[in-house]
Length: 640
Image 1 (cartoon, one colour):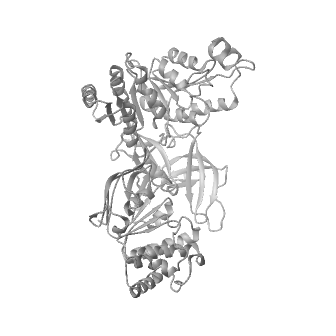
Image 2 (cartoon, one colour):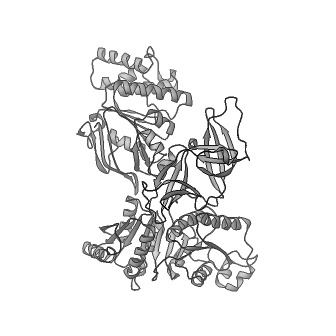
């Protein structure tokens, strides 16, 4: 192996930019690290080059560990996006710079320089200065300079990002030819999927510091194993399918036998992927001799030269929706790619009704919700453990139990209680103990690992106010947090306390994910706190009778409620919509009691004390509710 990365970790502050990345790269291989901006690709490259040290992990180059060696001792060539040429030097001097620093004789430097100029297609231009070259020519010089001292590894950090489309295509071809000719092991970082497909022997897809999948371009495109990889690598139609009677169903259509597919979703759900080019359109159902997905309307037609891309909206499909779930979506949006007619005529027009057939598809297993159970010495374990068992069974998720205490013996004892209470009822459990301040250790562990939900318990009644950990966790957690209160044997009814805008959409989408897995019915509640002119918010908050003077809801609130209800119903979730006027906190608690709800869903975004008569809504609900409360907080990336 030319390059071996073992469990690399790099943090900036509390944020893990590189999160336990391990990778092996063969001799002479062109590996492309592909991911969105800020995913950690360039940081990995800089760790390999020795420009920044890892916080954890090891790096080997050609069998030699170089983790603690300087960049000069690693024999790596590095090409930056902005060329980084010396402006006061000629092309020849730039290429020879590394050789001169290594005391290579002038005659040998000249021979090497001319070889490299010819290799990168710049023969005869050694006497020019960078300002006399085009951007593409400057990048060729940068590649030649990186290759001058015959590095064992070539590292390229988005080398074509600053160039126009035509020049990028030319340089990609030139780079591929050079790399294959000299057989140098190469890692290229990019966010451009086309670039990755054209250059890579293998692609490693990175998101939020994690290396998700590695494989040949064709395999990752046609048969990805994760939702992010499927949607990031080109156009993707990803729908929630279901295993029924031994077959994979998509709406009313049966696709195939399900025996070879693994489902980890309690509902038997799978993700069905079909690429835009996997679909065929027809004006009548009878024209299609392949499985028919459904009928839809053309919403957009784009001419892209060699391709024609259409956007359709299918009529709703039974128990099927797009992944990731979208807020307030009607029908099922679909992308279709076709080869346009040679005469340029468009076969299908916007507004036309068409039938859609599927030529090919790929099944992805549904990923379960990953639960983290945070336990400290003040936790009410009598309510926490039974609810955790119910939740883990409903979601079929892997459950991780983390006990945290400032005394090691206390942390270990808490873990012993957890093992005794949970292992007789659940199988997929991991146990960890950490020593330190409980909120800090729980948050640290949640950021170091990938979890979908943090579950903690209400404190015992004797707990000092300063030791109630949910107060701090709900403010600082980057993932949703569920505070368990009261003895709830199951989750049959969920109350969504929503407001308009993007935060309210997150609450509904994420809470819907939990409702779907637990089979709960839902109530979508909006409380209008606005008083009529001349009535202060403080008066309204303290006088329930003042609700009769409140203004009627604005149209955008009604639209938000309609779209929220649609979002839940599209996923087969029963939902009722309630709208009230009055003191927000009191109305939420009143509805929770009246409807005998087992879980309240609320957002951390509703925390303006001024808006709610001097009360922090989230904290008030957490303090006064008699049932568990799910606080949807953090930068949520995955809702399906």
